[in-house]
Amino acid sequence: MKILRTHSTDEFSNWSGSLRFTPYARLWPSNEAAIGAFVHDAISHSRVVRAMGSGHSSSPLVQTPDMLLSLRDLHGLIAYDTQH
Image (cartoon, rainbow, N blue to C red; front, side, top):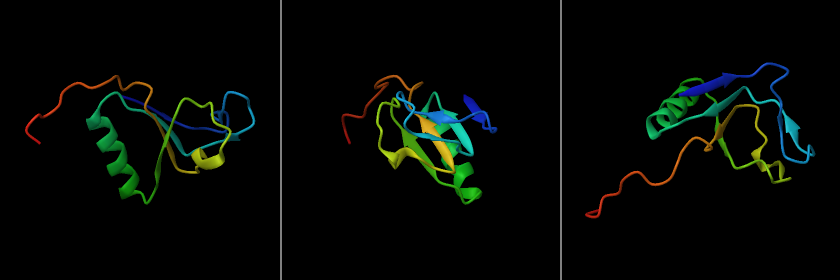
């Protein structure tokens, strides 16, 4: 599980550089348990987790002062329940 606490040099920038901001934390969970841990941590510290895509959008919707979560390290469907 990877987590990077940001400093002033850990600025998020989209592909074109038109959107730049520095979140409190950037998160790269590698499984569902890590996502749960990050969400629990955010709730306990009154923070918000914002999911991001590949960074190609110019929309400011991804901008957050809180926790920015990337789905980059999650890879496909692992299992499913055919009964539910």
